[in-house]
Length: 218
Image (cartoon, rainbow, N blue to C red; front, side, top):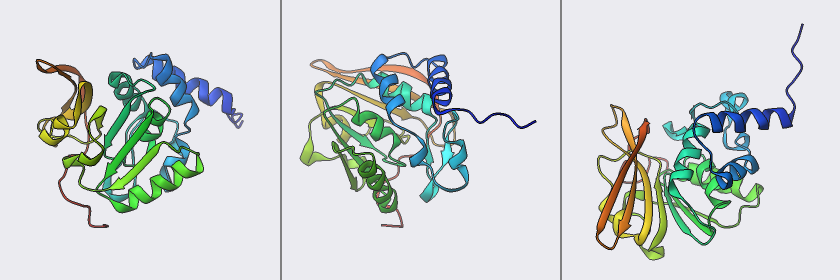
């Protein structure tokens, strides 16, 4: 016997349950993740797996993070509706779309022109007007829009990049994976205080490395 196809409501309920079971408990983050459909951010062979809690390959040799990691990073960032957020590593655009529901303004940078163009198309289709997507070397941040209330990096660096720390507002928070690209990395949260930087280690993760320069596609 063929199984009955799962309804949209059931799929959404299962998706949110999976997020909660992995530790995503912030009500605003869960509401944002319920509102943003992951499906349009995944093309080709893996489109049918968009609602599973797993990372998936996208164009330019990159990946879209599993939803629970997106949720945990968004939660750790503690974004308020007044915040201006910088994301390094647009990728599919999914993380930026979630942040757009939490923040006043989101700037997202990727070194691959193709990814930025595709993400812009999805943002437009979803009517997400508070995101600016830019092709650039994200390791230098976006000085002309600094300082930022929150910064999120979706690629692993050995240490938090100095230019990004300089562009973080006092009282601001940065969330990023750190560690060598070929070993398990750690997701950390950095708070910038009047007395310096405070670090929290959140969990083990695995991300693509943060690379300098533009991708070969532009």
